[in-house]
Length: 192
Image 1 (cartoon, rainbow, N blue to C red):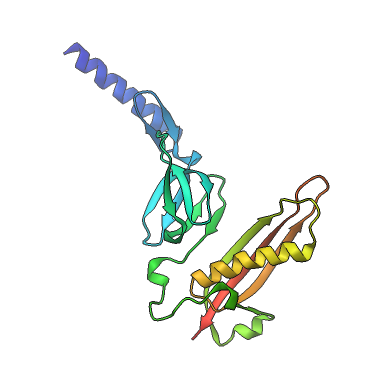
Image 2 (cartoon, helix red, strand yellow; image 1 turned 180 degrees about the vertical axis):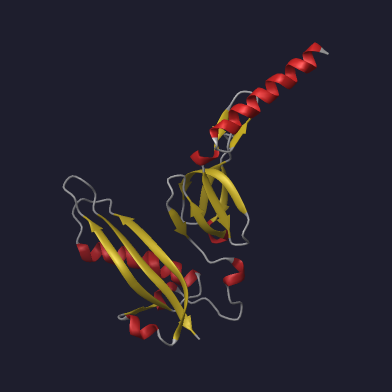
């Protein structure tokens, strides 16, 4: 009886400590971790998983669950959005309900770049996308940086069913001693 009472007191004490943190936590017998230290993956079917993302490949995202050391993977094409623990949000694919089944996706090479916002009057906006490209070489032209970021945006637009891409912003980073990089933002469109 005394052991049960002691166990209940310890359980209540640990619950009150976690409640005072105002941060949801995972815990097992040895470890407790805050959910705010993890990333959130939102799949295209709107389901969410809380994980720590380790790395990316061309086709997969590798992650571990909280309090677990086994690395798992998920195909990139099944992921709608990633919300990183830093607050950054990256959209990879549209939600399943946003995909128009009748529309065929086109190869990314056929995505057309729009010059002006006025060209979007007769089009339907699909989604906003961003691309970050960091060069592996110190000497790279701005044109090459833009070309690589544009390829990333075209691929994202094509995956979302977009046939047109409007570049809304680009930020080029070429600081002394740092690898050159570019952030490019755009909106994908399709015909009505």
